[in-house]
Length: 465
Image 1 (cartoon, rainbow, N blue to C red):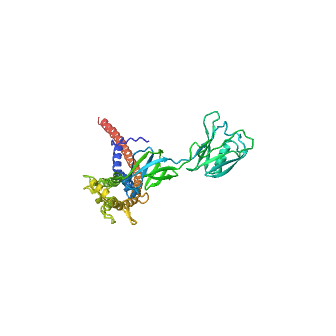
Image 2: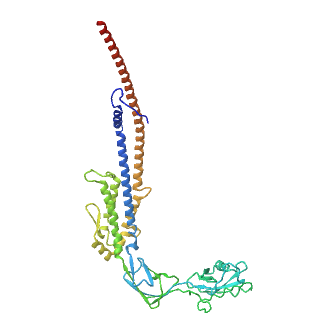
Image 3: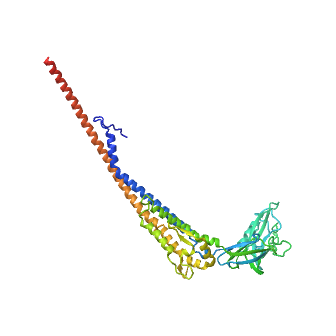
């Protein structure tokens, strides 16, 4: 950077003079920077409003769900034998006595003896006979697959409803074949008498079905078996969805004679909480808009004067009070206990809401979820909030496009003015440098003339003597 010394001839602080002149010239840029900061702050406020609108939308996602608005809860006298979950189809105020006699399980069988290798071809060749639910299946064993792993793979490839595996029990001869039924209550047995080529040294043995005595299953196949209020129920899974209307039972343990009491009731606390969450999300949006639009003593906030956010506030308030025609006894949220305060926010009168849920839950559901293909209040709010928060066409995107355009325009102006001011500063420095040069020359001439006058004066004084 060039070091410049000003005022050597004139004695003036030309650098300071130029700096002050340029500061005056830069005032329009400072105003543009202020405008740019204001626009960016405004965009941040719009982004925050969008976040609150999205949060409000999320908080009422289940407000129009009949299952949520008619939520049931299940109470069990014990969770040792089963667990239960309920939907809105469950009959509230009912109870059931449940006795789990057996769990659904697949048959499992394991070879009695172990083998010291799972890869050596140590078995006879021929055919295995596997009987599944009374149907016999023949599986060929050749010199290519007469190892324990080969037999396992051959059974699996046959796809007959039984899967084979190999375990290592840690003994001297650790490898044992395990057969598992693919479906509950599927009985099977295996007969290796068809492996009779006389070429092998190992014998697989017979896997007997239920009731066998030589090599019976380690786990018998069985269906789930239980009694519900004395009614005998069977199932092919330990999860039963139709044994009790609207109730899903997950069986955990079976024990004859042990009864579990199941009670189904309306979860009024959860229902009220779902409805009351509307007020929380609504209040956050309204309070933010009010706070951003008007700041007491300052004549308006960062979003003051934006017709869009005023429209959002007005639309939400209109939707809140507009009557919704339906066949129920309620037509507006105010009848559910929502009360508007002076600042536009809502409070929930718990007494009124409780009475509505206790006495007219069906009408509450109708008001919020709608009927006859007509949207309820929940869907109306959701649709509006969806439109306002849409990533492509929502409020924030529109404001961002406009603000980004203005900021870009300001940046271009600042860049143009900066280049002009840079040139202006060069011009001023050149002018002041020229002035210094002129003054320096005049000073030199003045000094020369003074010297000449002094010399003439000396000559005149000498002659006069």
